[in-house]
Image 1: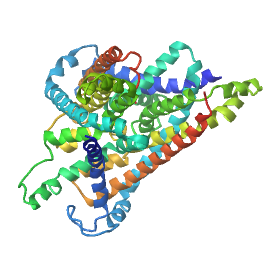
Image 2: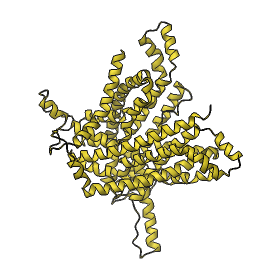
Image 3: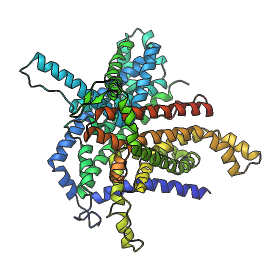
Image 4: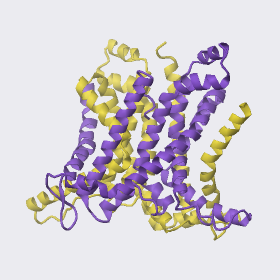
Length: 279
Length: 278
């Protein structure tokens, strides 16, 4: 029985990792033909990363992910700090919104933002045309709507992580700081934030990864902006190719690096600090 | 001073989460203007047409349920192995399960497009002389496989949590009182892990209902999900009000499911309904 169970566990790990590993292995394949392994080569990586469309899409993806993760980091941390002392009704409303952002499938978030932003910008555009007839400024979907859409989910992520850390923290440290006559802002900057830093940083990285990998929300809210997943989706629909393998593997490498850093920061630094926490 | 700090996030959510959902509802009550897009109105016309997307809805629920059930059957023993045989490597083993989930859904789905496509497993079977002309891609099988593969970690995680929390003493007591392993499992372990099962089923089924990539890439247009219907309504026929109605109905369905889950969870294990939602 015991061996059977362990064998099953191993089989599930194989099921989870082999498909991804196959893509990575074939991305280093030297041959023209997708299905035959003929030798090691980096030619598909060179081909992928000299393709101007891929480079441009990558640049867009990185910019969107960095911007939305930064916004999420600030909003989420501030909210997690503020909510415990906020009025009950506000706190409840905020919790509902955070849960909604996490639970509602991305496709619905994407569609509702698409409708909202197009409607709102049409209305703003007609005002701009009325007030400044000479201007040819036209607002619409694009970079900004992508950032807004991704930061909705990202903020929820950061809020949850920071809130969890806050709950496991020894709050007497903060009280002690106040007792020693530190003004509230000083307490936040010298006591609370340093203690929360691992959670905030992990939240930033997770929000970044989410945004960088997201397809479905971007699919609806991107306008003409093209992110790497959007570009990759279009190439996959044209068919399997070694270049797609190489691009996908590069994306994977980035995600895995971010995850590893987030995990190390969150667990290592976090556990050291909380061990001295509430007995 | 803390109070003010919450304001930006609240404003952000009102603007980019609450307002869009309200606008979605408003648009769903409107009419389609002749050239596509939205014409204000106050009618339930769009909801009356929901029946025309019945096939997409039925497909989604049917394959989604099959996928969720298969997922559960694969995940439960895995969670059990992790909880009972994990030993001191438990955390690392669990993290290994979660890692694939945080990589891009697009790439994970593409991996199966690559494996199931004509130059993948079918070619391998042909070369080994096992079977000729097998078609795996663009079948319901491929879609179910894609669902199981992509959402497995979301099923394993909550079941693991509920299994891991079971006091070993209770299981030991059951054995001491003469129950065999099968009886102990059926009468003790399984009922105590029910909240995890319910959590897992919900965590998998809800996002699967909104799936777009899996049916498109692995079903190849043969299998039409709600997600495909929505994308078509917004990008091809540009019928916003009807698309908004489909999306609103979809949210209503999700909320009913979550309500049902809360009720079931609080009956099975009072006070644990919030756990495992992430």
